[in-house]
Image 1 (cartoon, rainbow, N blue to C red):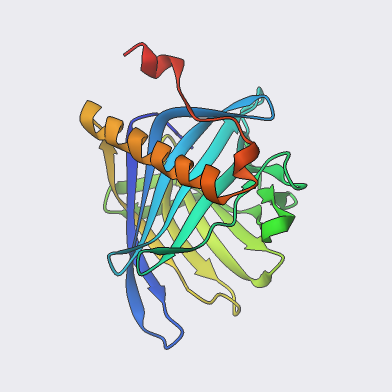
Image 2 (cartoon, helix red, strand yellow):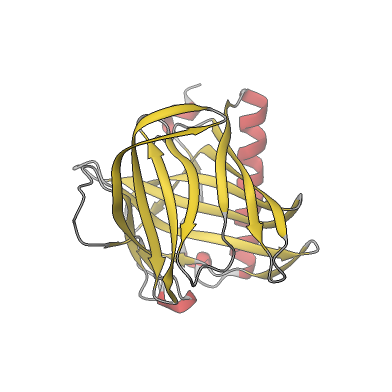
Length: 240
């Protein structure tokens, strides 16, 4: 699950509306050169954008850290959800606050047949996602290439136990495809990785500025986020 600062992953696909209409969907994940210390753990910061039919419906700061065994942990997130340009919700959860706990996003050595694991626990905002190794050694092709030895993780939650999101991870790349399974799956989201971009200095500076702008909003609008330490530029970035 590579999270190299200055990298942008662009995904495109569709979601299904309540009336059955397929709507274009695009997700951009920007790995910034910022970090955030959460419960004493310095975490990498991504600035994520979610578009439905070319309209921004969510912007998010997400925080990740790697332990000494190689497991990748999701330390929390601050999302803002929008409707016609106006923020309508911001269900933040941060490890150590309001009973929230970090969860594993990717195990260092995933194995088939092992129990599901928490991907984070944010009871105040109903974040209860869990992951489980579904398949290994798969092949898949998306616009960025054809991949082998692909790992498929099935994700579900307490609120939607009969719905699963399937995420396909390729070695040295990360998530390359998103699918779904289950009678309870409502949006039937599908995504494919269409571009991996290396941000130049100007684009990285812009991503950093937008992430810090979102944090400013978070401090203003979220009592949970207001208890956290501010974003910092990584030591690596400061040396560039």
